[in-house]
Amino acid sequence: MTRSAPAASATSRTAIGSAGAPAADARRALGARAEDAVVAHLAAQGVEIVARNARVGRLEIDVVARDGPVIAIIEVRTRGAGSYVRALDSIDARKRARVRRAGERLWRATFSRVRGVERMRFDAASVTFLPSGEATVEIIKAAF
Image (cartoon, rainbow, N blue to C red):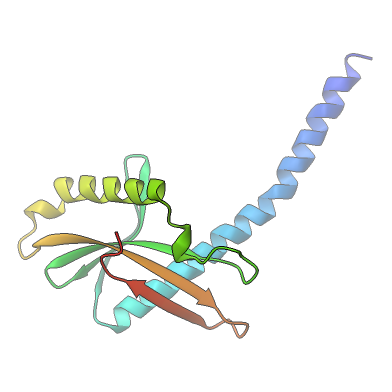
């Protein structure tokens, strides 16, 4: 009897874990679509995209862009239609601190020595997908 109980428990955990995977995949896909929309929006404005999903140690920056002499570190957010919190409101103090820390590390390691780059800015981007699938992008420069 004691042997069958752990096996049943392990099977249950596996089933629950695999059931949650499609939701995580859908969330990642939505995030990637939002980043695509932000990159397209910035490119249409003539902003150079330097990197996407840039890893800085254990930290990640969604989009790194060059806007003339400014390096923009951009946190991209989107929310579903039924969300109680707006996308931009979901960037809490802890997330802002992580993004800022990643940006500062990236500045010291790379951009502080790049000719023509004068400073860094931290932007926030909100992407809303309309029922038609079209994206609306709002970017707040120097958001934090």
